Image (cartoon, rainbow over all chains, first blue to last red; front, side, top):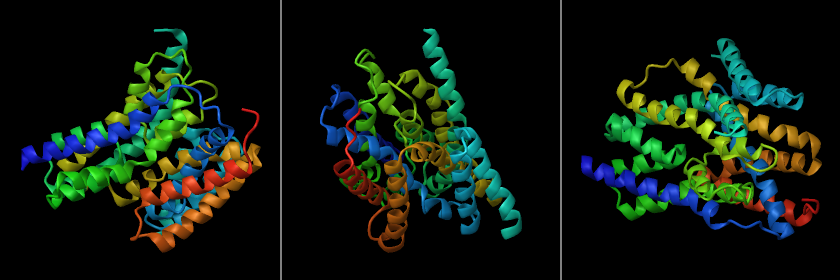
Length: 102
Length: 234
């Protein structure tokens, strides 16, 4: 079984690394097409937004604390808080609100 | 090392601290799952060091537990991680033509949701040393967390896990909100993404995996925005 597990790990790793490394190494010239460039410009915001909500509600013990973290995080980021500050604020909001919710 | 590379490395390390902490907690729970599957701490460490992917590893471990055929593991790993194809393509356009080729391989080694997020948020060409700085916290956080999860099982109190697990989402918020404030199209993209993702979660969970939902929604929403509002300036 142990040797079999190493083969499984090798397969998982090979697939994951190929997915990550191939586009970066194969696409070496600037993409000129305006539509494709625009698409790639919008991708990060859409992907990160899709992954944030509603997943943040399921990450916490209570959906309410996750929702509060979302609202406080958006407000803080809107008013210029840094990456680190927003991350810490979200954790704090969840911890404090769950003292009352759980 | 060049001074600008040193600065980039330090900034990457700084921005990587919440990533490493968040990873530690999430991978700890992944380790608990890997323990049930029968992985040794070293096997968990190795899998996490080379994969650094929560959903991808979760799917892989679940299949190992059932002694699935190798081809099935390969296909499911591909599906769970396919979004990195898009992210890696975006990053390929952030590389200066002057940056040596081998940096593309090392940066590609650790394109995670979070490291992708912080590196696309950087202005101008990407300095690979910024990514290396972030990897200094992300890779140990993820791989050691997995190994400790296998060794120790459930020792963190649920309240701490709950609080720390939103760190990664906090970072995503910090990345998407400032540009949304400046650009109405980006703001609309974020709002539509939230709504569409909410509906997909409600109606497609159990039918389509979260990773596949992310890819479909990204292609449809970002594609729609690119067709309706192409960016001429850059």
